[in-house]
Image (cartoon, rainbow, N blue to C red; front, side, top):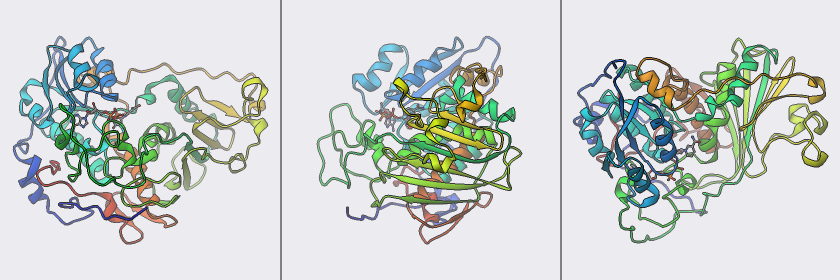
Length: 466
Ligand SMILES: NC(=O)c1ccc[n+]([C@@H]2O[C@H](COP(=O)([O-])OP(=O)(O)OC[C@H]3O[C@@H](n4cnc5c(N)ncnc54)[C@H](O)[C@@H]3O)[C@@H](O)[C@H]2O)c1
């Protein structure tokens, strides 16, 4: 693998401290959006007018699930790919909605909308979400909330400043399985929590190449490649390499396996323990260049203790890569402590999930199925009452109307995303202990680590920072 320096047009954010806020607001996307809009109040019979940005892939189910609300109307659809599998399906389902291939044009008619769903690839969450919030629009945004730590902090601050209703798309949080795990910890069933181990041991089917390919191919008719790239620097189109789905393999567009699954799998851990910001993070990872994500990592965050933890600090350790899980030894377990597999096979940890270790008991939280206590023989006859499900999508509409609340607002999902993304910075500096001062947004560690809190933005595409 060859190391290649990513070329950027400008760096921004306090971490890089290279471009002043004034200059950002004077250029790019911020122009025309600086007039602050505020979310309006809804009458009992008023409907919420929603727009979808990125309505193929996961965005299609986000749209369908949100549109199930009897109080929502889909008024606008935006996708950079006009084909059937992307914009086409959504148009078929919502033929009355206006269509766009550039979200900036969708937001030009801000008066026609109340709320926006952002389900684009990760590098393009922050720019449309921030622009929408500046206009006073409520935002539902896919996980991880953003591509960088600085962007996550910005989304959190924008939600607060503009008073909009927000929800990150970590929808598994609302399923009975994760809700039950959180409740068991909150009810003190584990005693005090001593440590947590979380993992995603599946493959990475989106990791197609080890380095950026030379040359490019013709962009298919109906695909708007420049809009797909958005804030990222120019690179030629390549079929099957980036769009759709396989952008996950590339640092310019994603945060690899931890970025993809961390905001799901660490979510019940964060919520159960009441975690906020880590004090430090250290990682080991397979070697990587500046283009493609590693294939295996182990990341350990140390958090300040909370009323639910045993000590003044608590460690959360993450494992990813094919077959990479904590050893039973690490968890203080033997195979007989786990439920037996099919046909009496020896007990094994699920393919992905967490083990929350406590002073009274430990809990396996599969991703995602009902949790169970271990060692199993100590809990024979113990029944776990499942928590009721919530609707992650329609609750956002109800929260906008003032009749419910969201459970993953940016005030919660921002810090969760920051934590996950700090892990991916640590994995790019294997073995180094990185100290995190969340209030100051300051990362201590080897040269270069702090610069990864933010990234460069293509000229003309700088987000509208708050
Ligand atoms: N919550 C979950 O369980 C879950 C599952 C899958 C994906 N996701 C998240 O959803 C997001 C999308 O992932 P995906 O797998 O659907 O990706 P994808 O590439 O398959 O689909 C993205 C869609 O957005 C469109 N798009 C891309 N750039 C756009 C832009 N600038 N403006 C408008 N449309 C644009 C694409 O054409 C495509 O239709 C990611 O953030 C991902 O992490 C979440």
